[in-house]
Image (cartoon, rainbow, N blue to C red; front, top):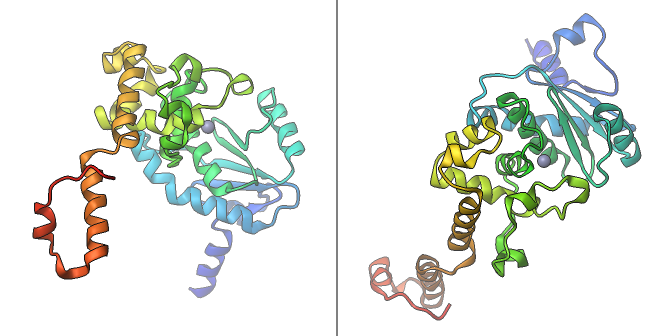
Amino acid sequence: MMIRLFLAVLFLFNCTGRKPQGPEEQKAQPQHFECRLYDGLPVAVGTSVVAELEKNHRRILDDLEVANLPVITVEIWANNDNFLAAMERNIGRRYPGATGYVQYEGVYVLNTGDAPHAAVHEFAHVVSLHVNNRIANNPRWLWEAVALYEAGDWIDPKRLSYMVSGNYPTLAELNTDYNSSDHKIYGIGYTLAEFVVHDWSIHSLILLIRTNGNVSTVLGLSEAQFEGKWYQFVKTKYLIINRQQIVFSSKYLWRNFFGDRWNNKILNSLPCWGWL
Ligand SMILES: [Zn+2]
């Protein structure tokens, strides 16, 4: 029993620098991912990437209403030149600066920064492809928004000067090709999906994927209306210090200043202060 358990753990993530060959290894295939490592990467790198993918696998499939997937190949490089050369062989062109890309049954990442997290982002792209196999970069704003949302790639809009000033990007601007864009989609993509889920539902996000981002049919808005309402959502939630935040901040400071002499009943009766 102990030996079987040990073997199961040993082969659970199946991260090697070669394809599985013998019947034992085939039998020991992991449930959802098959991992291949290049450039002499240690097995531990693949193990951590696949562990993070396994942790998020069911959640992302459930979110996007995909019942199941074939085993997804996960390939990881250490060398940027080798990563880009393989990218060109796989998809016909290079995207310098990218740390990951996908095919219908494959996730390909460069081991830089947080590779497990990057792999989850790419895996969300794979799941999107299984909702609609024509969704890759079509439109690009939605393709990235879904992956950024599912991977939790939130960036505080207060850190983005164009959002603070109200000069928010249009969907057309966000659709610019990776190699010629300003990459603003990576700053605000999470909030685009968050807005759809908040004001409509996660199912509406799926309908957008199925219709290649048809906001008119799915949400009943023109693209300009969608952009404006999205910005208002971001402004209200993240850019304006609203009454709720002021009350919370005031109570926090008051409690820390006066200690326990003030109970919640007294704190709740306090007026909303405008000095924060
Ligand atoms: Zn992406």
